[in-house]
Image (cartoon, rainbow, N blue to C red; front, side, top):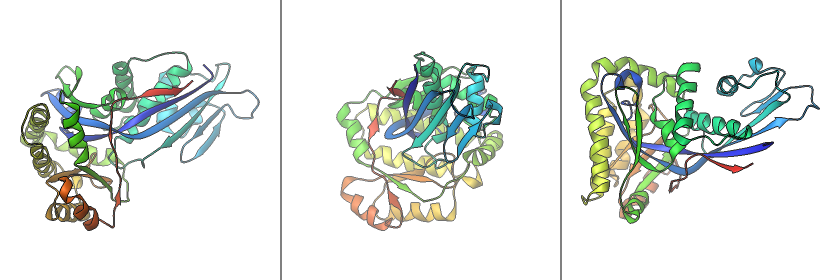
Amino acid sequence: MSFVISRTPYRISFFGGGTDYAEWYRSETGACLSTTIDKYCYISCRYLPPFFDIRHRIVWSHIEGVKSIAEILHPAVREGLKMLGFSDHDPNGVEVHHQGDLPARAGMGSSSTFAVGMLHALRALRGETPDRHDLAHQAIALERERLKDSVGVQDQMAAAHGGLNYIHIATDGTISVTPVNAPPERLSELDDRLMLFYLGTSRFASAVAREVVENIPSRRRQLRKIREFAEQARGILEGDAPLDDFGRLLHETWMMKRQIADSVSTGEVDATYTLARQVGALGGKLLGAGNTGFMLFYVPKGRQDEVRRALGNLLHVPFRFETGGSVRIAG
């Protein structure tokens, strides 16, 4: 293979965030409910022809032309190449390009989506067809063990598998990904009631995540409740309860999540959330570790125009669920 493009979806985490950190699930099981959406990270890779005065080219928010893997500034690319056994002694260097539909560091699991997509593309470049679960585990190892980031395990699983899933993490680290067993029309109704808004800023999620991890010993009651919400939400979708119960449960989980760490929310986030609820949203949450980025709201269809007008200073981002996960679209 000489040229490959991978397409990997971003995710929306509804319930269970925090229980997917090893610091939690090593002693108590974790459970998350999340979906991937039709916004993607694209990674293109090729072997760099031997006609340049550089060996590797990495194109992201910077353009890097370097003579060795060790010189690469992008940490995930540098360590990912090392993890997969790429070497400066190989016949050819590599070129890696990143493009994304959404901004980084905004609560959409972008770092894990990038890790999954990059590993997928690099492995495909070598002629491999990676198993989805294996690909997710490899991305977890890259982020946690090589990059030493404070990340959970749900984002990598979501990006690799795709779809609306219940993710269970056992205390021995075993992760199971189970698609939510709900009729397509019910999932379409849920999709129709969700609204996504961008606050216009970004942050390093690992900084917020570190505070969450540090607080785990003293926040076990809240995290047990957050785990229960994931189970309840799955039951709502797979049962015949009113779908609006899902929105009300989102409100409960956000109120609980705000108790996990001070940095989870801000005055701006709280004001935005309160306003959305006043004009029709039944519930919602700030996505990702917290502090800023994208906010999700569950809004009955008859109230969506009011919410859109009230939050007119924010960028509304329409989306739909997707089920493909990380795929190779070229090469």
